[in-house]
Length: 427
Image 1 (cartoon, rainbow, N blue to C red):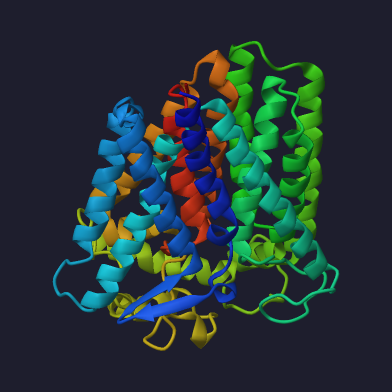
Image 2 (image 1 turned 135 degrees about the vertical axis):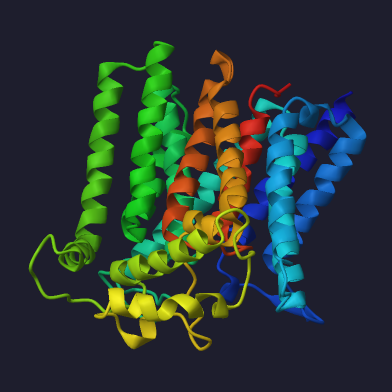
C-alpha cells in the first residue's frame, strides 16, 4: 500500500512539473518539425502528462471520471463539433485544419488527465503551489519589463502593458487564475502560506497585463464567491473589506495602464469628443469593426456557421459594408490575405464559425463545469471556488481574444474544467 501511494504521489507531480513549459510563450521554447507538424516543449510535457494519466487510470482505476460523465459528454461534444466543422466544404487547408483540431484535442485532454492524476487533497495543493510559484516568476519578469530592466517581445518598453514571458492575454489569464486562488482562500477563511503569494503575484500580473476583460471577470468571480461563502456563512465583514480593497488596488493599476485606450474608445463611440491618440491596429475601434463582420457572418450562417479555422476569404463579402460603416479605420485594420485578422473574440468567433450549435456547446461546456465546481461540499468549497474562478477568468479573457489553440489561455480553460471535475472526488 505504501509503494502504491508513493507511485500515485509521483504521478501527481507530473502536471505540476509541466506548468513552466505550458505557461511559456512559443518563442522561448525549443521546437522540432516533423513534416507539417511542429512540436514545442509544451506539447512534449502535455503528452507526458497524458501518458501519466493513462498509467494512473490503469493502475488505480477510471472511477473518478465516471462521477462527472455529464461534463465529459458536453465537453466531448464541443471538441468533436469543432473538429467536424473544420471540414465544412470547401476544405481549404486540410493539413492546417487537422493540426488545429489535434492541438485542441491535446489541450482538452488535460481536463480528464487532471482528474486521474490529482486523487488526493495533497496532490491538488502541490499543483496549485507550483502554479502560484511560476506565477511569481512571471510577475517578477513582467515587473522587470515594466521598469525597463529586461526586454519584452518588442524590445525595451518601460511603463507600458507587459507580456512577461507569455503574451498580454496569456499573462492576464495566468495571473488572474493565480489571483483567484488567493481570493477563494480569503472568501472561505483559509489561512495558508499560498494565499499571500497567490494574491501578490496575481495582483501584480493582472495590473501589468492590464486586460480590462480579465479584471472584470475577476470581479464577477468575486461576486460569485461572495454569494457562495455568504450562503455557507463563511465570509466575515473584515475579510470582505480586505477583498474589496485588494480589487480596488488592482483596478487602479489596470486603469493607469489602460486610461488612454479607454478614453480613445469612448471617443470612437462618440461619448467623448477628443481626437484618437492610438493606432487602429489591435485597438478597441478595430475590434468593434471585426466584431461587426463576425456578426454579419453569423447572421448569414446562423445554425452551423462557416466552419472553424477558415481562410480570411470568409470576410470578403462583408468588407465593403465594414468600410462604409467604419470609414475612419486604418486600411491595415481590415482583414485581408496579407493580414488575417480574426474576429478577435472567442465568443463571437463561436457564433460566426460554429453558429448557434457551436456557441451553445461552448457555453454549455463552461456552464456545466462552473455548476459542478460550485456544488462542492463544504469540505471542498475552496477548491470549488478556485475552479469556478479559473473558468470565469478564462471565459472573460476570451471576450478579447480569438480562439488560438495551444496557448496558455486554452490551458487555463481546460485545467479549470479538470479542477471542477476533481471537486468532490478526492480520496
